[in-house]
Amino acid sequence: MCNEMYDYNPSNLTDREKILLSFLFSSSNTEEDINTLTCGLNIDKENENYILLLSCLGLKTDWQYFPKNIIANLEAIHKFRQAKNIFKINWLIEKIKILNQANISVMLLKGLALKYYYAKDYPRIMSDFDIAVPEEKYDKAIKLLVDDKSIYCGRSAAYHSEIESDGRRLEVHRWIFKNNGEKNTDIWERSQQINFFGTKVYVMCPQDMFIHQLDNRCKDIFNGVFRNRRINWIFDCRNIYRFFDKFDIQEMYSRAEQFCSLYSVRYMLPAFSEIFPDLIDKTEIETKFPYPQKYNLWLKRNIRFGNLFIQYTENYVIKSNIGTVRLIDAILLNFSHYFVWRTEKFLSPFNFGFIKYCKENLNIDDIVEVWKKYISRLQIFNK
Image (cartoon, rainbow, N blue to C red; front, side, top):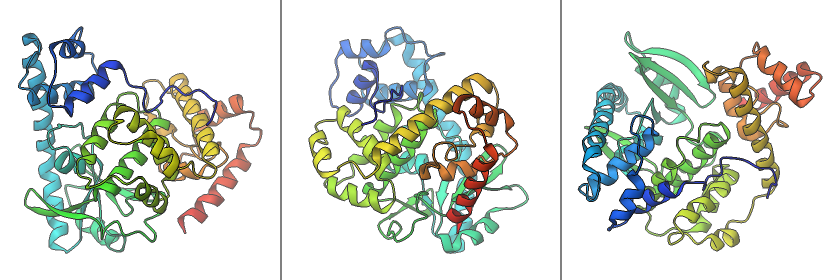
């Protein structure tokens, strides 16, 4: 393993968060443990994701042992988030109906699939909606979804485009696993069709959904947005686990390899087993899911990127749009293939502040040559 230190270990949960997770999937609780979860709780300053999960626990246990002075506030926050999601979802339903009428299959991704299939009781925070359509029907789908009220924002990355309307944003993906463009996969064939507010949509099978969750949350870690989501991904994966007939480590390895997600899944899976050792034996991961070739190099590069990016945002872009500076993900870290897709998304060759920062901290003398090499690689990647 890499010897460099990194603050955002995926299993680095507080004791309070571990207790909350255990109670959310257990049939009993104690007054002492509830006091641990609520003692000194400041609802106004607490991480909202923690508050939402705490409210789910309260509703699940009929508020047993919860202090009476916080129950009303927790219930209100839960209902507010549910109402906010419902307010936005009506627009999405109309868009899906348009695609249904055109015989274009739609798959719910990320928060949508988790919220409306795998973890129905959790009123998660959804800043946007993610769906996927078959790649061969992608262009047609975009044309159908854009109208007088819905603005096409362009292709924000190689794998999806964005459509906005009155503060609601829809990301339409042509690839579900962005690492390989869905080549030679049967992800659609393995998916399950469900009813979504009167429309027909698909969700990934539990195995693929589990891997997709691990892969996406791994990216969040190295992008520095993991601090407020460290409990969410474990909660989501635990809910997905409930849908497995049998959890097969060897199958996880094969599917992750097919989706070009071996490194990220290998990084996250032991952390999940640490929280739920009764579900996955960590020694079984070591034997049946060995470290992929060049794993240590991948981890070292991404740890370097994570530290550099977080330092840069803290020192140079406080209170500014963080998206405008996510630009050298793959370039300066020996062209790590892992981050090529995100580099393209936030490409900004006129971001001289970041270039100056990298020159000062990484001793890179010829930024122009770095750009030439990167652009050449990007063109190859998009063919």
